[in-house]
Length: 325
Image 1 (tube, one colour):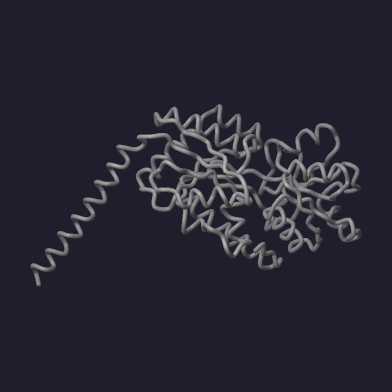
Image 2 (tube, helix red, strand yellow):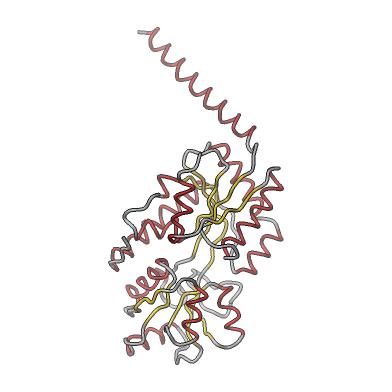
């Protein structure tokens, strides 16, 4: 019995040594070839721009080309599925935005990927609020007035939406405030902004880059940001938490993920390099120009955030009976 037990212990130790050796080898050898970061949006979109900045800086740090590849369609599902099925070798990464990493799992029961099962996080790279926006001529000055106006004019209460994230934010506003906004689908946030400007829709949630020119021209009014606190870009706009709805905070997140079985040493190397990029003054400045906030995260922290947000949005979708299958 002692001989058998000793044999088992030695076998386990040998496996652990081999795994540690393989991990160290992966860290030493990687990268030996170009790295791809897959983006599910078209070139020029905000997430695409930030990914290209990260790619350029990462290439300089690891000594290999980092290529940004756009695979658009199906609300980002095509790109996410491609990465989920890619070899877990550290050479295929995914720019993971809120829409595909936390919203799709909440509103689709049948997806060709599932984030906790198919991806391992590298790190979060940005977070940013959206702004609940109305036409400047609408007779409301703040969120409470908008809610009262929508209740008094239900035939006019509608939301221009380019996707499920915006539908869920409207649903959450209805749950918290009691105002029901009927969704009108559009293809992009610039189109939703235009719908508010020309009177097709009462409200839209838009990001800073789309909103800023219209605010400057006096054509639109931002009532609240969806963040927990005011943004530095639009410090005069109160946060939705300030307006009495802390449970309706809904910031968009963006991170980098890899196929699930990517070796841990490679994951941690990428986490280290990308977090270093996030601290560069020129990157911080560029993020601020685009309305993003930089932050230092980790593989574990981003994994936890994804799981928490999927649970949260699934609860909102269930309460609002939103299913897109």
